[in-house]
Image 1 (cartoon, rainbow, N blue to C red):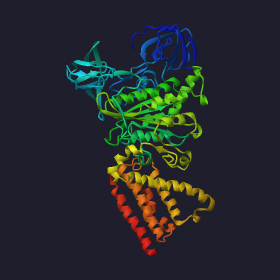
Image 2: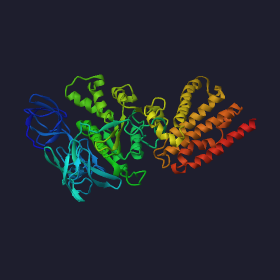
Image 3: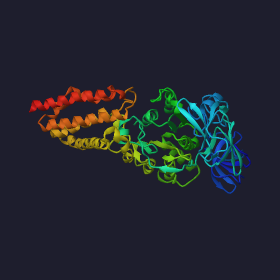
Image 4: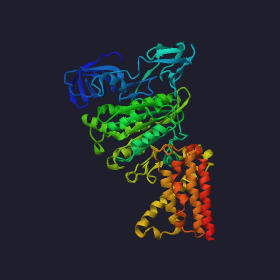
Length: 590
C-alpha cells in the first residue's frame, strides 16, 4: 500500500465519519488506516492539520486518541485475472475469502487482497522485446475463463520500450511479466494494475452509440431500446419488479461482461443473486453465466460508506474490461440506496442539506456516474462500451422525488415501472405510456435488414393503438364498451393482444424468458397483420364481436410462450390460418 508516513489521532467520531488531528499532508480521497484495528477509510475533507475521514467499516468500539495512518494512495481497485466469478463488497474485498477467514459475518479490520495471490495464470506474450508501447497496449493474454480472454495491458499513463517480456507459462499475479523502459527508469509490470475508483479511465475518443444492447425483453428491445454505451434508469416503487428486470438483463443481454452491483438492497435479494447467477447458463455458449460476471454485494446492513463507494468500484471494473475492447453492461440496484448513503454521510459531515435532505451535490454525483457510460475508441485503438442500467427506488413510487428527477437529466432511456401494472400481474411492469428511449434513431439501422426497413413504422403503429386504447378507456367508463363504434372495439381487442401477447413476458417460462429479435418482430407484425385484416372485415360489415370470438385469437396471445425463438416459422403457418378465418367471415357477410 505504499509508505505509511503521515500519522495523527482521532479527535471526533460520528457514525462512519471520523475526524483526525495532526495529519498535515494527508490528501483528499487518500486511503487511511483508522484506529488500532486499522479500519479502511478515505479522506473526504482536509482543513489544515485536521482531516475528516469516512470509514468503510463498522466504527463501534473506536475511541478518540487512537491513531490514524495515511497510505499515500487513493482508494483504488485491483484489476487483473481473477476478477470474473468474483464476489466483492463495496471496496473490493473478496467476500468468499473473508467468509473462510471470519465466518458468515465480516469482522472489523479484516483485509484480503481482491485478487488471489496463490492462483496461477497461463500467460501468452503478444508484445515483442524492443517494441515501443503506450498506455492500453496489450502485452499478452490470459484465458481467464472458457468464455473470456483477459488482455494484460500497459497501464494508461505509461509509455516506453519493452525491455523484456516473460515467456509463455504459468505465473502468479504478483510476478513480473514485462519490463518497460521509460524516460524516468525501468517499470516492472505485473499481471494486474491498480486504478483510483473516482477517476474515469482514459480513452482516445468518445463515439456515438450505434448497435442496440439486445436484452431478449420485447418491450425493451422493440419499443424502448438501449444502445451499447447508453445509460438507462429503471424507476419503480416497491414490488414493481426492478430486481427481476435487472436479473433478466444480466442473464440475457448480449453484453460480453456483466458487472452486477447490489447497492443497499435487502440481504435476501442479494442472496437470490448469489444463488441463482452461478446456476444460470450463458445463452450463447451454455456455460455458467458467472464465467463472464463480476458481483459487488453491498447490502443494506453493511457499512453505509462502503455503499457509497460500491458504485465507483463497479464502474471502474467495467471500464477496465471496456479498455480491452469488450462491451460491458452494469446493473446498479439501486442508485436510490446509494443516494441515501450520500445523504447520511453528508449529514454526518454537517453539510447544508438541499431538497429532501439530500446534499446539494447529488445532481453532480449522479452526472459523474452516468457520464462514465459510453462507447469509446480505447487507447489501443479497439472499440468497447459501458452500458449503465440504474434501478431507482423512489419512496411510494413518486417519480417527482430528487433522485429520479436528477437521474432523468443524465439518462437517455427511461423504463418507468408501474405499480398498477404489477398489481395486475403484468410483467415486466414497464408503462409504455410514460417510458421513453432516445436511442431509437441510433439503433434503427441495426433493425433495418432484419425487418425490411419496417421496424420504426411497425412500432409506431403499435404505440398508436396502445395510446388510443388508453383514450377509449375513459369513454368506456362513461358509456360502456357496447357504445363504441365497431372499429374502436377492434382497437381495444388489438391493444389487448399487444399487451397479453407481446408486452407481457414471463421471466420464469423457459420459452418466454428470452425472445430473439426475429421472434419479437414476427410477433409484432402478426398482431398488426390481424388488426389490418380485421379492419377490412369490419369495413365489409363483420361485427367486431364475431372476430373477437374466433378460437384462433386466444392462441395468438399465447404464441410468445408456445413458439421457441428457433422455430418462428410456426408463427407464419398460424397467421396464414387465422387470416383465412377472417377472410371467410368477410365472404360470409358479402
